[in-house]
Amino acid sequence: MNFTPFLGNVWMPTSASTVSDDTDMIFYFIHYLSAFFFAAIVAATIYFALKYKKRGENDKTSPLEHNSKLEFWWSFIPGLLLVVMFVWGFDQWLKLQVPPANAMNVRVTARQWSWQFDYPKDGITTGELVVPVNTPVKLTMSSSDVIHSFFVPEFRVKKDVLPNRYTVAWFEATEPGEYNVFCTEYCGKDHSRMITRVQVKSAADFEAWRETGGVPPGTSPAEAGKIFYKSFGCNQCHSDDGSGNTGPTFLGLYGKTETLSDGSQLPVDDNYIRESIEIPGAKVVQGFQPRMPSFKGKIKDKQMIALIEFMKTLSK
Ligand code: HEC
Ligand SMILES: [Cu+2]
Image (cartoon, rainbow, N blue to C red; front, side, top):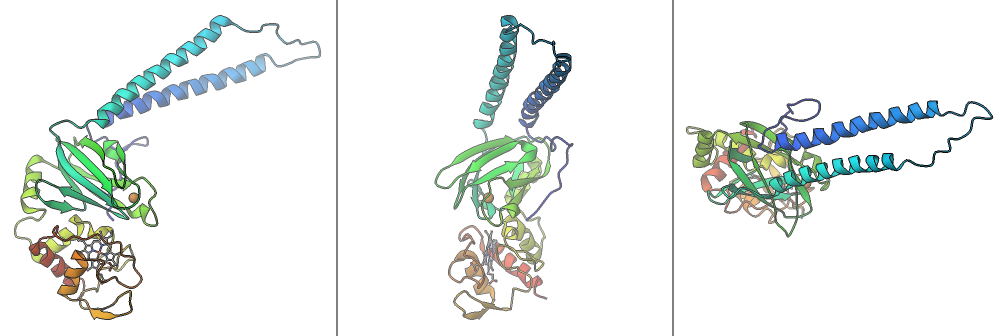
């Protein structure tokens, strides 16, 4: 789980996509309009309550029954405002629905309780969404279990992620940086930990990332393993500091004797780790649910070695 602190004001997180300012304008319009009418109506209620308070036995109720002119205007003006809200909101909603034709494609898979991003053209799989700045990105999303929801507050993009069906969202980030991705549909025990990041990189940095699959040149295998541990999203379920999570911690894992769900024991070596990553269901650790997705075909040989070398550094 990675959490990047919010920047922004008391109302809104930073605005970092091409649609976020327009979406905020609609929010502010509706908000201040409602605040204005709330104040006006409460003030008028108090004023009339005092003005027409019954002051004595002979104080009679006004004979006035209604006022057609007033009734017309207090229906017409709110009606008009409602139409403005609807047309403005609907127009913005349409913009959010339709990704530009030149958008870059990324597939999003949500599951209890992690995110996975696949770049079909590059054969890259990651647990963090990495995108170039000023480029439209189209997300084709689905869930492998229950309903989740993809939400990046800074982009003002939120869309449900459903099993057995694809939903589409898109955004164009305007500021390089790191932003949180939250799941905003309650999806079980660790829903609140289902957080990852969007990294918005400059065009050059993004190209470099794409070339190397996320590792700077000259990185040692163990250091690269630490990067993959995050970029494949292992850290969404496995800690490296001994703390509990959906999966067992990696701290002290390599070389220890593991107990499986059927009570059998075996040493944690390279082969066991590889099998755990490629066929997670083959041997399930005692006390854990078989929640891990298979990374077979997604983690290349060098990356596998790097991950194992990284785990070794946690067992010293
Ligand atoms: C959605 C959560 C999730 C993600 C993401 C995930 N795992 Fe797991 N992993 C688990 C769970 C749960 C277990 C324990 C159950 C089992 O053995 O299948 C587990 C077990 C393991 C084990 C065996 C641990 C032991 O104590 O014997 C290894 C090794 C492992 N995972 C490595 C990885 C690596 C490497 C990644 C990233 C490429 C990863 N996992 C991503 C949930 C996850
Ligand atoms: Cu979720």
